[in-house]
Amino acid sequence: MPSAIVHTTPWEGLPALVPLSWVYRGGLSLVRTLRTPARAVASIPRVVAIGNLEVGGSGKTPLALLMLERWAREGKRGVYVSRGYGSAAGKGPLSTVVLGAQAAPPDFAGLRLVFRDAPNLAASVGDEAAMVARRAPTIPLVIARDKRRAVEVAAGLGADLVVVDDAFQSFALARHLDVLLLDARSPLANGRVLPAGRLREPPSAIARADVIVFNGAADAEAIEAAKARVARWMHARQRVYGLRRVVRLVAATPAAGASAVEALLVSGIARPEDFRESVQATGVPVADALAFRDHHPYTPADVRAIQARAGRAPVVTTEKDWAKLERFDWGQTPVWVARLDVELVGGGEFDRVVE
Image (cartoon, rainbow, N blue to C red; front, side, top):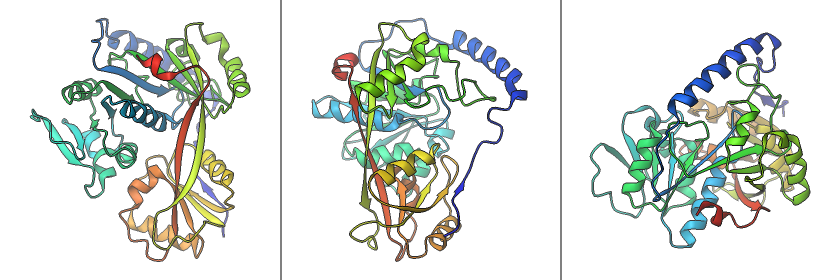
């Protein structure tokens, strides 16, 4: 097979862009000051904002799913909220509610209702939300450009807990808890904000978090090593956890055999290198990789190119990508989905922190 194709960010780290980063930081500080609500937050539902500093994925959606599933097992009603990046719901003026077995809300004026078995759900609500809908069929989802309105809709659905995905920088959103995810290996990337680096905010924003979760820190030693890298911006009241990632491959097409060998990786995520490491950790050799840009809208031409690249080799893709790829005809191509589960490590019982 030909060598892997990986899309990179050519501008990242260019010294000439540093002055633009200063302008970005100044504008961001002003926006945060003007938009952060001063009023108290109602006690119910509890609103948890999950986010990160770095552009791209960091395990936010799997962590949101973990929290919602924990609460569901306790008999509490959780609702997932997202912007629905690149989707119809994220662009339109209405809030979109993804339904399952539950009935429509009593007052659905101004709402767009979608059932989770709708064709091409990812195009309607976004790939992360479609993944949550598949993994958690009893949990309602609210997708909207206006996250404050989405939380109001979630409250109307009777939510005890609302988990808002990618909301650390949603300054206008009132919340009870800010959960910040950082990469355990490189919590601050190159330390620069956009456009000279990958940070959405300067490292000082770490102090704003109530809970810090180091993605990829699987034990106490790794957590302490990650903490040491950002200790100057932390404070004693913050709870700190590691996030252990567990990946297993699930057959997605009838042609998938007993196991995947010499796989072609296909992904449209922010960190394709992490995906490769996760698949290799399952014992499956990686022969080649096709890495599209994050949130890539797959087309029939993309699928034909993937099939041609794979030949007779199995294709392994992410859950987020499969939410958009499953609608295509894969014929005799064996496709496996890397199902990602996460668990919190250290820091004590997380549910008590939320309450």
